[in-house]
Every structure is written in structure tokens, then in C-alpha cells.
Length: 152
Image (cartoon, rainbow, N blue to C red; front, side, top):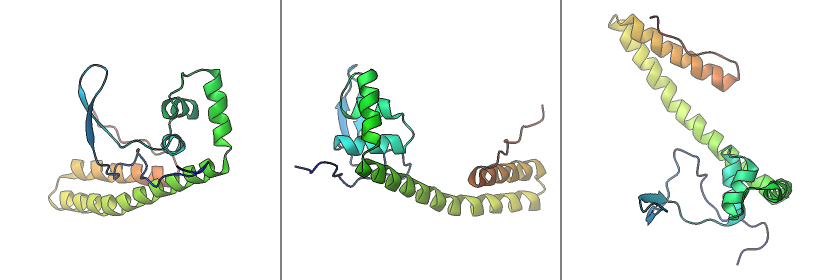
């Protein structure tokens, strides 16, 4: 049995790179869907909050409680737990590192495509790719760079 505040090591569920052993099960409508392995409730709560789900919603899902005022209060109380705060921070840091690794691959690939498009004389395609790069750079640096709109 786990001690209070202890967590099972697991990858964040929101990560695009996380791979879980998959088990088929039936939902209420009888349709097949894939389920990640069950987690300790505090770990499931921390993963959801780290992924951007509201604390009250994630608490209700992790602890099988109805979404009401008591659930919101319990979620707020759990967010003050030092172990939960630490785990949420760890999960967010892991997600940020995965995003950085993805950008290290994506940006050079897009630059290469833009150069190839320019060399082939496909300027619209090159401009579109450069616009995507600018948008990515804006999101990474925190500035608001709107995506390019195609002329009608």
C-alpha cells in the first residue's frame, strides 16, 4: 500500500509521446475504447491538472465523486498538498522538455522545406512555411504572432 502523498511513476497522460500498455474495454454504450492502466488517485489528479484540466473536474474523475461544491473544496485543498504541487511541477517540466525536443526536430524540418520550396520557385508554399515558423517562434517566446491568412 502506498503512503499518503506517494505517487506511482508514470508519464503524463496529455503527452503526445507517452506510450501506455493499452487494454480494450467496453464503455457504457458497449463500444470498444482504449484505457490507460489505472493510477493512484492523487497521481491521476496531478496528471490531469498538469495537462490543463480544472482541478475540480480532475478531482471528480480521479476520486469518483460528483462534481459539486464539496468536490471543488476538496480539489482546492489537495492542490495545497506539497507532494501534489511537486508532482504537478515535475509533470509540467517533463511536458516542457518533450515539447522542446519536438521543436528541435520540427523547426529544422520546416526550414528545410521552406528552402526547398524557394529553390523550386514555389514562393506561396515557402511563405506559408515561414509563417508557420514565425507562429511557432511567437508561441515559444510568448509573443502573439497570429497565423498567416491566405488571400481569397
